[in-house]
Image (tube, rainbow, N blue to C red):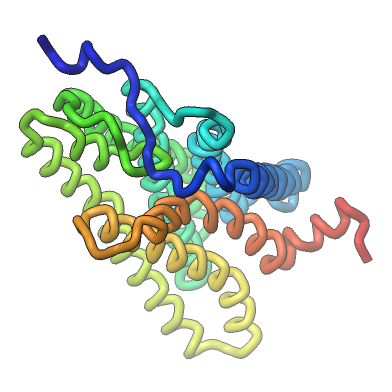
Length: 306
């Protein structure tokens, strides 16, 4: 008899001293989730209601914030339920869905950061061609592809992982991910592992190379330009560059620690596994809300701060 029919649920066994710190974990997670929802929503509202912000650069920022909300909603509600539950279980289909959503969030983040780098590159390095290259229709196409291509790539990876068949039903994590599902499988993993490696490379390396190229060109232009031009360029580029480096480092740590069989304490693995849905969703609206002068002024007007 197929073992999959004997087990209905997977156990998320990665929690640390949950019985002792259950309510502390729940309170901190709820506070974090609330801050993420509120901060991203407020900046999105400001971009939406102010026509002066209806420009390609702010459209990409809005898409990045929407993706932050998307990634957070795919993780936090289930996590909050588990923190108050006697058992931390999830059905295989629900685990596959959460894995799909979490990976799509990460892939979309890299794609949007590349799109933002393209926008900044054209604006600074080819200003006379900006309005012809970065048109409204072009932005719509870029955003459509930024969300759709990762869904297809990760969707195939999720289907391959689901078809392996499970023979282990305890995941030493507090959230689901495709790689853990593959490791828990007992079928032939060659195709899934190979495709997963290819997708991981395609979802990260081209974007890293492209962003490195664009910022090298931007830096070269800035070094040859006036101080005022350099200051304006850096004010719009530094937040994006900080967010890109921050997210890239987090993803690298997650990929590395998830594939090292031993040597890393479980608590470190646990913290690292959550950073990608803690730091970017929380920092993105704060950085863009306070670092970019136009958005900051709109926020000040919204809350009538002096």
